[in-house]
Amino acid sequence: MANRSEAINNDTASGTLALRYHRQLRHQHADATTQRERRPPKIPDANCRTEQESQERPAYALRKRATLSWSASRPRHANVKRSELRELHYITAIDNLASILDLGILSYRRAEQVEHTSVAMDEIQRRRANVVVPGGRPLHEYACLYICGRNVMLYKRRGQHDRICVMQVVSDVLDLPGVVVTDANASSDYVRFSAAPAGLRIVDREMDFC
Image (cartoon, rainbow, N blue to C red; front, side, top):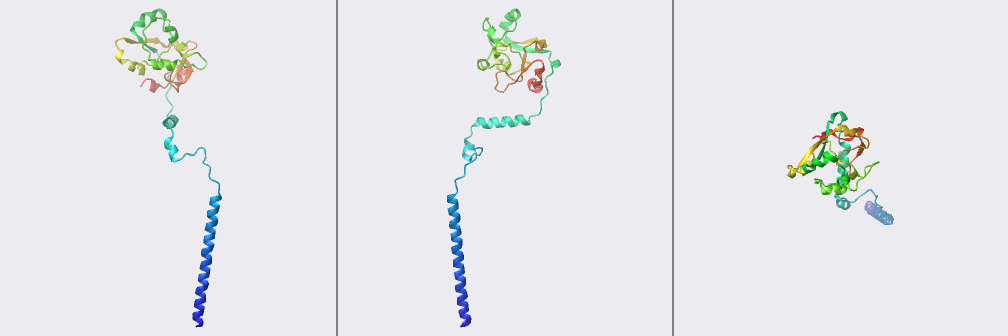
């Protein structure tokens, strides 16, 4: 009997300890839950975006990031050297040749005062009207030439091939004061300007003569 009593008492003691341990765990869980409820909400960092916000990010932002990444990884280009250029090019209508031989190649603004046939693209001219050369004058006050006449402009006007021509202009004009070089179409958003002839260093030979 004694052994049986001890067994009953031990079982009761174990049950009591188990009950106390269970209550202790329950209280700890309740305390932890209360602390989480009292904890102030986490304020998201300004640079963090939820998955939904990332999906809603404007496409232009993604394109800009891709462009910047491509530019950073792009190898340094080979510059165009002054000694390599024997001629520059000017695209115009054949009807304008007599006037050009008399008055020379005029800026857009001066050409407006002379009767002529325009082959300019209206969209490009509207954008150029808002461009001012850094440290210089409005772009429409410059006579614009091409380093290479085999370009997008000539391609766009391929339907007028029987009415337009490409004039050769001596490259000595690069040595005149006030001449400016660009590394792209002067109306583009990311164009760079640099004074000639040293400014030829910004021109990518491979891109220009591809």
